[in-house]
Every structure is written in C-alpha cells, then in structure tokens.
Length: 267
Image (cartoon, rainbow, N blue to C red; front, side, top):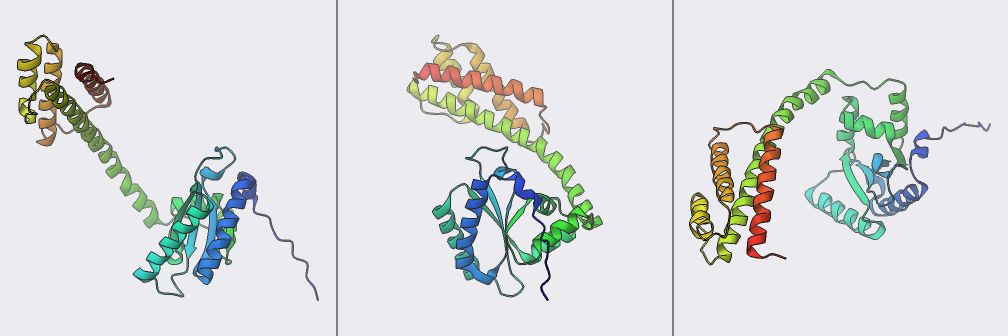
C-alpha cells in the first residue's frame, strides 16, 4: 500500500537569495564527500545571507558534527579545520563557517540559548539527518523554552558587559595618549632630537619647538594634560571616562596629531 505524504516546505527559503542557497548546497555537497557520516547538519542561517543584504555579504553556515558516534581527537579536529578552509577557498571566501558538536548544539537548544534559538528560527537546513527541521517545528509550536539556568546565565553577563564598557572607554583614552606621544616623538625626531621618555615630552616640545616659534603653546598643554590623564588612569585614580569627556579628548588628540603632521611635513 502506497501512502501519499504531504511534506512541508521550509518557509525560511523565502528569506534567502537563490544564488546564496545554491552556493550553500554546492559547499555542503563537497563537505559530504569529505566528512560523510561525521555531519549531522549543515545549516544556512543569519541575516548575512538574506535578500536584504548585498551580494558581497558573508554567508553564515553552521556545521553540526557528530561527537557521539566518534571521538574527536586533536588530529581529527585539525584535519577537519584544514579541509573546511580548503573548501571555503574553493567555493567562496564569503562563506563563514561555525562548527558545533551535536552534544553542544543539543544543550544550547535544550536550555533555550538565544543564539541557538535564532539559528532554529531563521535557518535553512542544507543537510539534515533528521533533527534540525523537527526542532524548528517544535520551536514554532512553543515547545522549546529557555531554562532558568539559561536565563540567569545570560543575565549575569549583562552587569559584567556594562562594566566592560567603562573599561573600554578608559582603554580608548590610553590609546589617545599614545597617539599623542607617537606624534610628538615624530615631531621631535624631525627637529633632530632623540625621542625622550613620555614624562619629558611636553618639556622638550616647549624648549625646542615653542621657544623657537615652531609650535604653539597650546599643544604643549595638550601633551601635558594627556600625560597626567594617562597616569591617573593607570594608577586607578580615574576609574571612569564619560562619553562627552572622551569626545573632547578625541578632538584634542586629533588636533594634536594633525598639527604634528603639518610640522614634520607629511604630504
């Protein structure tokens, strides 16, 4: 007795350009030749391949490998990595591959991990051994929910990331300091001086350039202020730089660098 089965078409197919889907299929075909049963799924996902993106955008492809039926030794992992790089070079450098072990993928989905959920929501399985599309259906039916553990894991990241944002502004201010130091050193070298240690740069700018009317006093003040600012940051006397303060520091550093460029005669 023959049973007619009405197979469902993945609605996500409409989200992606046909040329990108074809490229993903071609890449997957070669992956199957190289890796065989090691592959559990190959999925095209992410906004990078959608019709709203340009043809030059990256093509995000998830490869799920079977770590339950085989042991992933260091040698196997390295060989896998080299083959994937070779296949990317063969097909298109637009391809960006993310590899997950099946056990890890399952844990992410079971816990309702946002990244895994987004892949399920938007992805197209180019190769599926029978787990990806059923999970997509379960997600759409509301059967996959984030666990309490996953909720708290993601929340705990937020305060740390918030704190890191302040650290990045401090580090960016230090970068401005070094930009000013490097530019000042270049100007002094143009004048025939040996680059001094940072604490003596402002004084040497004043003695060699300002006194000879080769540089305005304002730039000595900028150099001196950046030196003291960097010291306060490194000694933890200054623990936060506000956004508007950084904008001001950036403008001063940019002005300083441009003035040194003019002095050394950079075309």
